[in-house]
Amino acid sequence: MARATAPTWDTQVLTAFVDEPRRGEPNEATLACAQRWLERGVPVVIPTETVYGLAAPARDREAVSAVFAIKDRPLDNPLIVHVTGQTHLDALELDWSPLAARLAEAFWPGPLTLVVSTRARWPWVTAGLDSMAIRAPAHAFAAALIDRAGPLAAPSANLSGKPSPTRAEHAAQDLRGRVPLVVDAGELEHGLESTVVDARGARPVLLRPGALPLEAIEDLCGSAPAGADEPHARSPGMKYRHYSPRAEVWLYPPLAATLGREALGEHARELRRHGRRVAVIAREAVVADRFVPLPHDPRETARLLFAWLRELDALEMDHVLVEGVAPTGLGRAIMDRLARAATRVVTNPSRALERSAER
Ligand code: TXA
Ligand code: MG
Image (cartoon, rainbow, N blue to C red; front, top):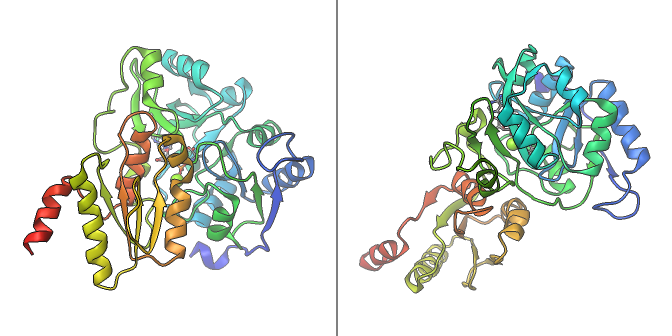
């Protein structure tokens, strides 16, 4: 319903920085333009250090409702509020627990979102919960804009269900015509969303693994966050299907053993024999319609992962066979996103190989 009446825009893409595409001095003309739209209650796409966000002033009910409509986002999935300073935190009437203070002190600005209790009644942001998710982004353009425009509610700037945008062109692909402005800061530093932690109690509870590795929180707090060993993260947004390319995604464990590698190779061959277009993302080369080498550095995998999923869709692959990574450090968030994108998880590749040999 909202779609039929929503305005359509001639989407403009402006650069975030003056000299280099990725860093330096925020571009004054772009800042002023973004601020003007936000003041008029119109959401715009902005870069952060994690993924691109679709931002609206958090206190503006209409503007935040527009964010949900633009993305086709389910209304029961609350948004993160992005802040830069104490005045912002004060305005949000938060019950800032000792744990939240400690985590913010250690990791802000940065890719950590803290869920805390709030007395502010902003149901358009919190989906009616009495808690609010807050984060202080470590991105010069985002921070400069928040300094001017105040706290910004911003989900990732993709259509609901699609991979989060890590390049301005991904956001433009999804939201062209639905927003007047995409601010381009090139490929972003992390490429994965922030880690979301419930900081209301004495011990942190993991709601979504993300760009801040849990080990960093464990080092600070002396123990791993609760919920870290649960297969399904607990934040409301995590119940929806995510990051889903059109292709079928089969996820394999890290393929240390030769048999595992053979299984993936055999699956690729078999699918191609049946006329399917197959992409493979793995450490060692496999014959496929498109082969993407899996980097050894998980930071690089994190940065590129969502771009691969989009690219493989653009190439109209039917199947994507992906070798996983060890689920520690950043690998935990990488495996979480891959598992959500996957239509099949191959837990025992050598058994799978035996079965396909028997057939
Ligand atoms: O890196 C990021 O976090 C990016 C950038 C733009 O900041 N944002 C992002 O937003 O990923 P989004 O909306 O795609 O994901 C926010 C997650 C969802 O899983 C949502 O359910 C959860 O945070 N969340 C928001 N408010 C919450 C709350 N009050 N309690 C529990 N979870 C909450
Ligand atoms: Mg999202």
